[in-house]
Image 1: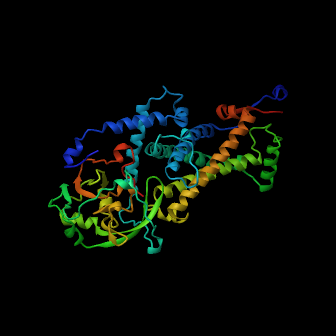
Image 2: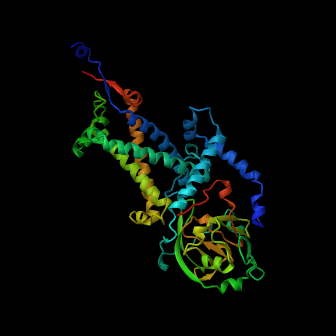
Image 3: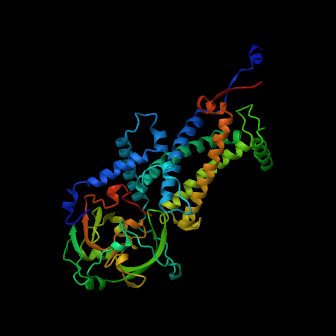
Length: 252
Length: 208
C-alpha cells in the first residue's frame, strides 16, 4: 500500500486489487439477514449495483457534510483534568509495528499547488508560532478520548509556504505508508493544527512522531501521523481508509 | 337493511399514507438496526456484542455506508408519516386519548390473552401506548444520532445529552426501546393475523 510522490502519480495509481477483493468479500458476507430481506423481491443480490448506490450515498453525504461545516464553529475544549490517561493508541497496524522516524534526517516534503516547495526540517517547524488545544478525539469505531496537542495552526503553515487556498484538497502521505486527504475549508479551520507535541512532550512515536495533523472537527482516521509529505490539489486524492469505503469527509 | 343484516361492511382501518410509510419504515428500521449493531460491535458500550450473522454491512465501513444511506430513508419517511399524522388528525383520532390506568389494564389483559381485537379500526390503550412510544423512540434515535454524527457542528444538541459519549448511550437506549416494541408488536400480529393483512389492504370487515 505504498502511496508516495506527487499528485500526478497518486491519480494514476491503480485501485489496489486487495481492496477490491476485500470489498467483494464483505459484500457477500454483508448480504446477510437484512440485505437478503431487502433484495429478495429484486433480481437477487445484484451486489454491484447495491455497492454503487452505497458509494453514491457516501459521496452525497460528503456534500451534505461540506454544507453543514461551519468554518467558524469551534470544537469544545476541555480542562487538563479531562484528559484521558493513558491515551489509546490506534492505527491500521499494531503498537509493536510503530515506525521509528529519525528526527535528525527528517524532512517534510511539499508538493502540488504550493508556491515554495522547499522541504522543512524539524527545527524550522518547531520555530513556527505554537499553540495548544485540549479536544476530544472521536474514532470512527465509536470510542472517544480527550488529549492535548500543541503545534502550529495549519492555516498559518499553508500561508507561509504559499499554498493555493482556493484549491479543493490537501493530501498527506506518511512514514507508515498511511495517507489521507481533507477539504480546504477544514484545513483552514482555526483548530486544525500541525502538531509536534502531545501532553506537552515531543510526540512519542506511537502518537505520530515527528508530526501529526490534529483536526478536532474530523474523525480520528482523518488525523494523519508521521506526516512526510503535504500536497495541495484539485484532484480528489482519497486515502488509505477512504479507498476501502470509509466516508471521505467524516466531519464531526 | 340488507347491508345491515349482512353486516359485512368494509371499513378503512389504515389510510394509504400510513400503509406505505409503515412498510418503508420496516425496511429502513431493519437496515438501520442491523447496520447499527455492526457499528456497535466495533466499540461496544457494554460487555456484549451482537452476533455478526444478524448484522448488515460485513465490516465497519460497510455497516457505516448502510447506516448513513438508510438514515435518509428513515428520516424522510418519518417526516411524511408524522406530518400526515398531525395534519390529517390521524394521531388525534387513533392514538388519543390515552391514560396510564387504561394502558396498564390493557397490558394486563393482553398478558392474560384476553385483549379484545374485534374492531381493528380502534386501537386499545396498550396499542396506543406502543405506537406513541415507537414514534418517540424513532425521534430519539434521529436526534441522538445527529448528536453522534455531528457533535461539533450540532454541539448545542450534543450538550443537551451529555456530549458525544452521553448521546451514544441514549442512542443505544432508544434502539433497545424500539427493538423491544417491534418484537412485542410482531408477536401480537402473529396472534391476530388479520391485522397483518389490514396493514396491506387497509380494509377490514366491521363485526356487528
